Image (cartoon, rainbow, N blue to C red; front, side, top):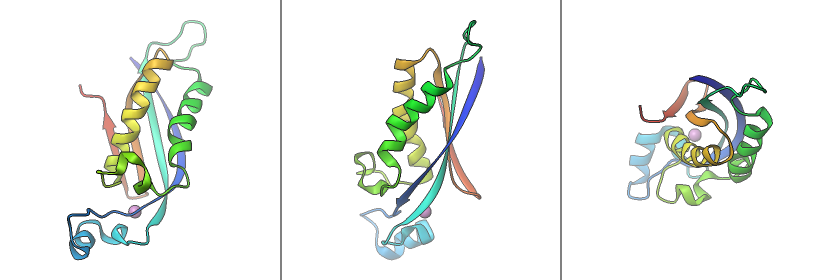
Length: 138
Ligand code: NI
């Protein structure tokens, strides 16, 4: 199998807090990200697809199609938004881990439906010091 990775960036805001915890507990868990006013990140989102290379195009998936899928499914939904307002984060704290889970679940189905490739992994880079990666089960 061969892989291809596209890197995207979207700006979005979040508040990390769990409703069942006190302010002090949330601050202990999430640090500055628990600030109730929310704050933004420029999230890097790396999308890796895999599969067989098309004999004619020499590509796994047309670059424009992957970009289009990302724009339709992820950018339009999350960019410049407060992630906590999205239905996916109604019961999920929008940590980098959970953002990766939500993006992966959405793109996996869409890529399978619209291309001959499959989603291998999604990496969400929240800051220069932390990122979270989710891959398909082995
Ligand atoms: Ni944060």
